[in-house]
Length: 120
Image 1 (cartoon, rainbow, N blue to C red):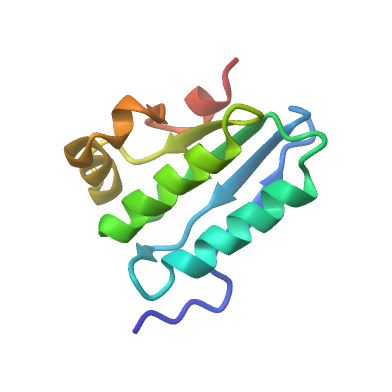
Image 2 (cartoon, one colour):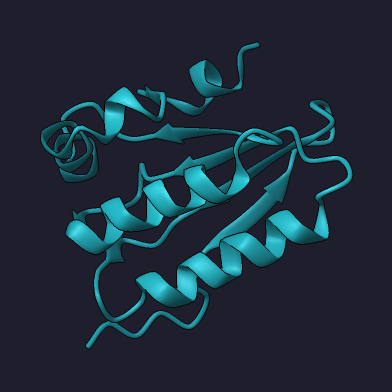
């Protein structure tokens, strides 16, 4: 079982109003995906009046199974059209490969680094 005391790091970017970045944990699987979903949605709901862009940062994620794919897709479906969702994933990392193999990259823009994801 995966135990992560602080499952994700949340950052509001002061120089980009309406943008929140959520850095996800090193592993996303059956043990923590549901909790991550609730945490992401709580953060989005708390900022609903001003949130225009949500970036899910998977650069630190070294393992992700189908539950991680489901998590990204669920967040995208629930937040659209009021909030754009983008993903950052290391180009040769597991998360990027899983998103590509499952076809999620067609529906959610995936960027190689945070700077690219934040460009308007």
